[in-house]
Image (cartoon, rainbow over all chains, first blue to last red; front, side):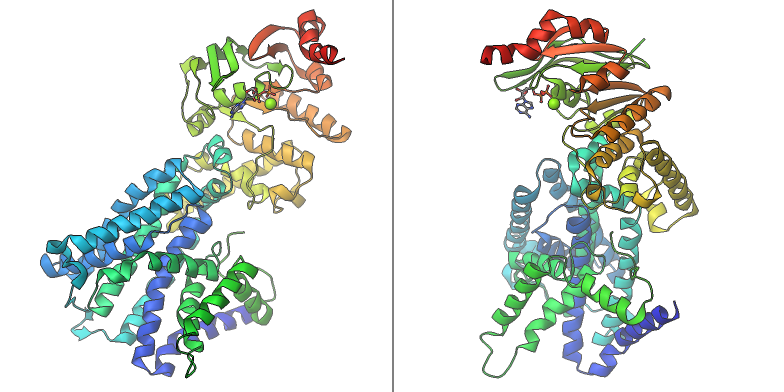
Length: 323
Length: 257
Ligand SMILES: Nc1ncnc2c1ncn2[C@@H]1O[C@H](COP(=O)(O)OP(=O)(O)O)[C@@H](O)[C@H]1O
Ligand SMILES: [Mg+2]
């Protein structure tokens, strides 16, 4: 037990010290972006990995969240906190529209509707110029402030880490409960789950709602962190990247999103050798492809095993995985 | 008193009428056997009653209430539980978790109880786990199996697990679709004990089965289907010796000879 505590302490220390050791504000900013993506990937782990409802349209919720907070803050004068809340709420409301097709569709056909949803939202953002300023985007989104101090990248980093810790606790409690069991039953055999008294519609609504809410929160963070948003951040390719992060980390593992997002973000950086600029993305993508093909459970189980080998006497799980 | 009555129940798949104008009554507390050759519509009957398929016409009355075409989960919660002819377990759930899925409604907790890990949820967890273990005991799945994956169990145990999951709904009517299929002698004898044990607890059973030995041993009443229609009904020995029934089972074979 003592050893495990030391292990957790070391990880916590690394997380806390990261921005101080790195020192480079731009690198911390990139890390913040990846943590924002981790929030979305965590929601996808819940929705896709645990509840079995695929989504390739989450960039839409990311965008809805980002635009909702930006516009309510800039045009309606909301305090930023309220803008965050509005972003989450708006995404949860929109998630209802996306869950309705899932009552009838699954797998491939559901993924097509989520792609269509993502595209519709994107087209609206681009074309509703009076509201969104179209392709030019929204400028001058205020950053966060606390006690009169403007947040710098390091402040954002700590806020994101704390937020992720809370969200982790949230999905851990849910997935380890009777609700998570209903999610997994629905994922493994929808018909058998329903014949066992599970109202799968409610659980689809819940799964979509949770992950949309997460993506909305991430969108709000992104808007206030970068101060500028435009439609190109919410294109279809982003949606696939979020799913890619969740899969790389481990689609059915609670740590999947948290581990997957930074890896997918920073892996390309490892290949930025001079003269290699054209190929570094390809190399990184290839490695991610290899991970997905040869480790379909993602990197989180590997991480967990390594942790247990170094610090653990028992084989149980940091935070508890699904199984 | 009848726990279940169907009135003119009909189910067609395109041109195939799998259930045709069925009036079937199931006496409360009894074991009713539903037999008939392959393709005679037995599974379809279970599917329509449990809400898996929508009836084309006709009605299903359960405890005096019309439940025709209700959602599956509503029918399950109203007290009709079922097993599947081809076993359907949850691929990544353990034995204990599989049974707990069907205890869902009994938790009486909300999502916030899970998020804040309230005492109410902890009590519900302990209570429901205890009940799930009792049910596993009834079907012969002991401690050593609790944390195995359902699908990793030997065949007979998987069938037992399906029965335990069905019983976890605390049903008043249990629909069993060929529970003895593929079982060895030992498993077969044990299944017979489970079925009689369940009956003793006051649960009504509809048993679809090809193994006549089991049907003969446990049923109080028998309904015979052929080509989706009710051929005859009555005590098992009467049905068994009915020339029409013999023809339905053997007729094809003779024709082939
Ligand atoms: N989902 C379905 N779609 C189309 N035809 C079906 C379906 N289910 C059953 N049938 C047809 O209905 C008839 C009765 O099948 P079934 O109820 O499975 O018979 P049994 O269980 O008595 O062997 C068969 O002709 C079968 O092909
Ligand atoms: Mg059948």
